[in-house]
Length: 451
Image 1 (cartoon, rainbow, N blue to C red):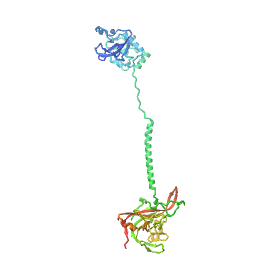
Image 2: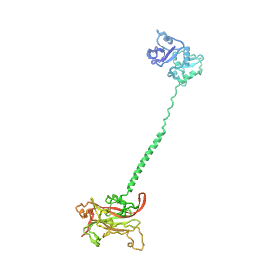
Image 3: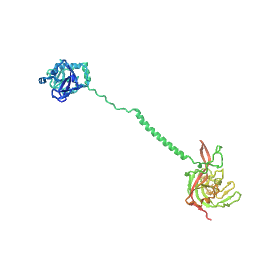
Image 4: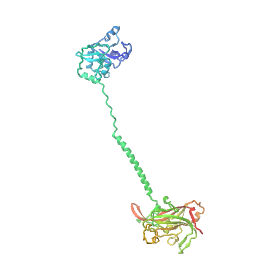
């Protein structure tokens, strides 16, 4: 006979019901409360078909007048032993209903095996480390079970394949320990390479910008390194060259003011003053000497000193010639957009007094200690630069008449700065070079000559 074994949720009595009542509401005969037969209730196979009235205890049978589908489960020794042995050798359809010895100990009974079979005794508890083969044996336990004689002797359970299988399935298997999640090696490579790559790129960009800045700083203005022969038409290799534009704006960093001293490679230049005066021709085109000019001119007084290690002739009259088509003249005075050049039309025939064109020896030249300093070759000179008229024949005096005293003027002065080493198209050359010195002053700085 197959019955469903379960406990009442109200009074805790162990109940049995026919298998057809699985999942239905029934009435507990012990407390009278309504209880639902669990769907996964343990199925117990009794050895013989026993009416439900026989499942009750003697006291309950005396008070029951009619059969009930649910009865208190009380088993004799023979029926319990038989049901337990059959359950031990059968396949349990519901593995999840197996319990441990801890559940049996709470019911106040222990399971023993003697020479005849399995017996139940109350008042003795199983230890925590013992296991129960199946809940089918536990379902037969109740407080009303008959006591086992004291002479019953405990014996070890016989070892069998069926019992071992039941014990293995009843034992709670430990969950496998979850190990720490390993971080992949690609993450560490990325964590190391990414900052390194970013740092390398940033440093490369910074160095490249610094290199460009240094290159721009070293890039020289075209007017800083002019060929020595102004009217020449060939470079050092004999190839035709393009004349550098003489009227372009000079570099601002090369500007010098009155009274200041600035070095330009092999020379030091000091603008002394600007005077409004009449100049004297030392020689004119028709051969006359010491002829005063008919109109006053603007004159710049310069001091030039040789600071190189070789002999320089820093100034020539060709540097301060008058404007002529086809000739590149780099010395002129800028008054707004107008340019005013010198008075010499032909430097082979004309000269001005005060324009010194001597050679300057190195300033660190050492002579005889007994000799006078004046006997040594000069290392500096004073000369004049003259502005007379524009290419349209307009005189400088007319251009300055109505200008405010604070008007700023720039004088572009062409001077030779000595022999320099320069790299031209990947090849090194030692050349004689000239430069443009921009002298800044205001109209109020002009000194007028006393009559």
